[in-house]
Amino acid sequence: MNLFIDPSKKFYITTPIYYVNDIPHIGNMYTTLACDMIARFMRLDGFSVKFLTGTDEHGQKVEKAAIALEKKPQDFVDLVSQNFRNLASFMQFTHTDFIRTTEPRHLKATQHLWKELLDRDEIYLGGYSGWYAVSDEAFYQESELINGKAPTGAEVEWVTEPSYFFRLSKWQDRLLEFYHANPNFIAPESRRNEVLRFVEGGLHDLSVSRTSFKWGIPVPGDPDHIMYVWLDALTNYITALGYPNQDSDDFKDFWSNSLHVVGKDILRFHAVYWPAFLMAAGLPTPTRIFAHGWWTRDGEKISKSVGNAIDPIKLVETYGLDPVRYFLLREVPFGNDGDFSDTALIGRLNSDLANSYGNLVQRVLSFIAKSCEGIVPKPDPMTSEDQTLLSQITDLLPAIRAHMEKQLLHKVAEQIWQVIGEANRYVDDQKPWALKTTNPTRMGTILYVLAETIRQIAILTQPLVPQASARILDQLAISPDQRTFADLGAALVPGTVLPAPEGVFPRWVEGK
Ligand code: MSP
Image (cartoon, rainbow, N blue to C red; front, side):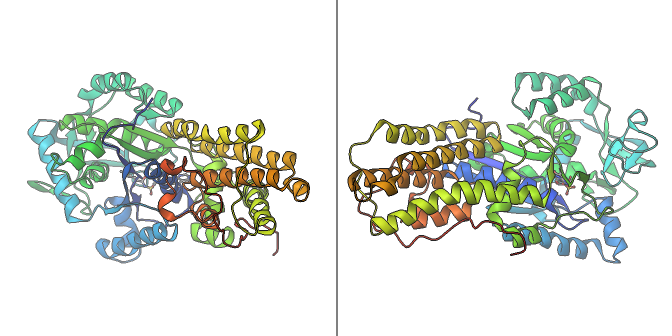
């Protein structure tokens, strides 16, 4: 499909911007984690990457949360936005920009976009009467309600107020043409079909301003109105590229290779409203939108009222950053819903990290330390078994790149761990320990093949488990500037002196 294989080698990835009415939890950390894995992968693959995250600070929901705490909205958002920034740095995410919708650059961009839409007669003044769910910040048709509530279960209220409307209905056919011409625009396929069905069902003009509260971006020329929070929020993706200036190479190259990762609950805003706003303003659309599923905990929906939210900081303090990353990215096919439980996390930690990857590294490196004085041995002519293992590794990059193109993050892990399994089998079959006195040359070759295998695997696992991968590469004396995918082909140099090995994935022992 080669979606992002562009000669400019630029890549733009975004998370949704998070509502600041709540503290960060595992659900919203998950979206950023997935983007972080993708961003790290693309950088290692030679792309210049812009990785954007941030906070969505306007709207009725945030205003209500501030009032409940008797705070001014601006003071409240300053405080809570910082929690999201702190979490991102605690998680060592590699974002290159953190946007807040209360920043001047964003005010400028949204007001410019508004004027553009108004000048093109895509926005008109009317009056809105209908249902609104504050916790979703979304309007619903009467026909969409289920037992008097939004389809998401949120409470709705009847709203009557003057409002500007965006001519969304007019874009129905253009959107459908666009989806058909760009079959990769929405993923996964099942979600794409949902969007198609929704748009085929008919689109109504969208209310894009409110007058009944004040916490938002003023509509240019009509300050009684503030912009609908979703029009405001979606624009963040181009604010961060410098919009209204569209002439910079940065804007053109990054925007034409862009990926929005979102949760399934907000796909409609991204896959329907956002391209319609952009097309109506004469702007290009992003390249792709991927919607991931939702986490439940021990089978239950995660919610504040149930009190079962998972604090990412506590989780990382308990299990470590890499095990948490690995579990969340590997356990559930990316795009599906998943269930979080400590038991499942510990299972993955012990089987995939400690027993499989950790054990491979540990036994090979400690054997080299003990039997080769910590020096990378020289390979003698290789057998077909040696070559088979090495060629399985060479085949890994194209295979995982193809998964990455489709954001099949779990498959990237699966594929690498399959080769880790092969390498462990190779150790068992070749039994290097039995050759120490009988055939040290052959033993050296086996250990060389294994150390080289580990080097390449550790380069490839960096996007998934960055800390452990770095420690493994340190133990192989690979310099930090030789750890990209372009370095996969530069084999280990025999004779290199290795530092003393130490375990990278301790087993989780209950009650330790
Ligand atoms: N502010 C809007 C997004 C605007 S983007 C222009 C918003 N914010 S949010 O904080 O409510 O949600 C942010 C993300 O967190 C969404 O992608 C949502 O799907 C994700 N998650 C929230 N809870 C989740 C789970 N329990 N599991 C997985 N992801 C979940 O929507």
